[in-house]
View 1 (cartoon, chains in turn green, yellow):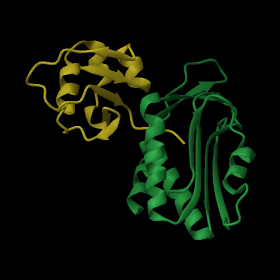
View 2 (cartoon, one colour; view 1 turned 90 degrees about the horizontal axis):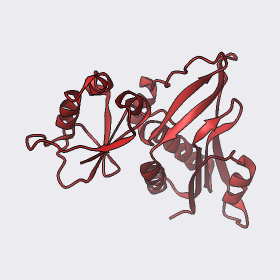
View 3 (cartoon, helix red, strand yellow; view 1 turned 90 degrees about the vertical axis):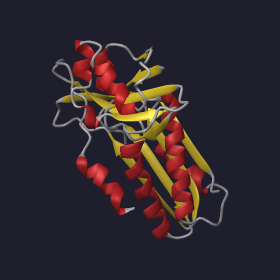
Length: 151
Length: 83
C-alpha cells in the first residue's frame, strides 16, 4: 500500500508542505498530480463557506476512496486533506495529491479520488453572505453524481 | 435507536442527534424516515422529500431499503457537497 495521509482540519492547508511529503527523500516518484479546491466569493456575495462534516465517518470514507484508487492504479503516495469549519474566499477547502512513476496513473488517481470525495465523503457546505442575510445550504450537483458512473 | 442528523436536516429537526424508540414494524432505513415524518411538523418538514435523503448505518453508506439489522446508529443527511 502506498503511503497515505488523510486528514481533516479546521486550520488552513499548507499545500506546499503537504505536496512535498509525497516526494521527499524518494527517487521513484516521476509524477505528482495535485488538485486544490478553493472557496469562491460568488461575485462578492459570500464572506465564506461553513463546512459541516460527520466526524466519525468523513475520514474513514476518504481513506476507503483513497485505498480503492491505490488498488486501481500503481500509486506511490496519496495525500487528501479537507477543511471543516468556516473557510474564507481564496482559502483551500480540499487538497488531493497523488504520486506515481508516470503521469497517467497520477492524473487518473487524483480525479477518481476527487469524484468520489465530492459525492461520498460526508461534508456539507453552507454559504455565509456578505449582506448578513441567512445563507443557503449548497445544493448537490447532479453532474457530480453522474461523474461517478464513468469509473 | 441513536439517530444523527446533518446540515439542513439537523436544522429542520432541531437537534443534532437523539435516541428514538422505534415501533416493531419499522425494519428498514426508509421505514424509519416514514416513522420520523409522523412525529411532528419539524420532522414532516425535514423529510418532506424522503427520496433525496441519504443514510449511513454505523457510518457506512446504505440505500434506503436497507434493513436496520443489528446497527446501533443511523445517520440521515442531505446529498453531500464536500470538496
